[in-house]
Length: 77
Image (cartoon, rainbow, N blue to C red):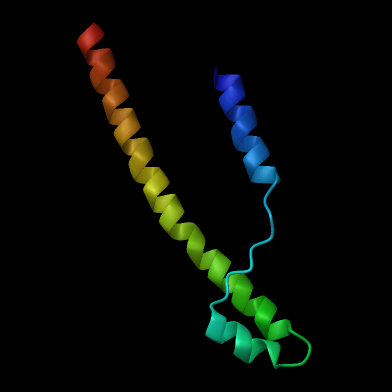
């Protein structure tokens, strides 16, 4: 079971599709610029900022999982 979960997580981690995370207004302004370097920078910044809510939710989920697991092992003892 752990091997299957690990494989699934690794598969999702390594097969990530490129994300275009601009809003419609930002895209319209940045597409008019020549070269597109600012648009790439904006996209990278948005994707970078999107990571933190997922990390926080994952951390809270892991803390809940760990506390429930500890409580279950305390009942069995």
